[in-house]
Length: 70
Image (cartoon, rainbow, N blue to C red; front, side, top):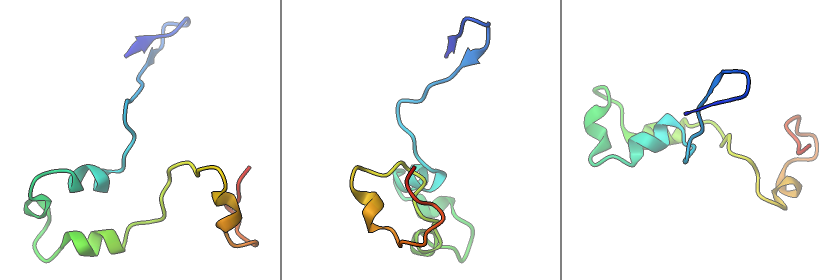
């Protein structure tokens, strides 16, 4: 945590990941899930990645996509 020029606390993270990614890195992640829920089901229902696109991936999107590259 760093304090900027205006006195606000700024937190920077070394690694960005979703809660599902954090859970899947644990040993035996299924033990932390509710009964009847599996890791396979969670990964199937995962929304598209919110991570920034790599160079050249913009062209792979559908042409009418609203979430195009800026």
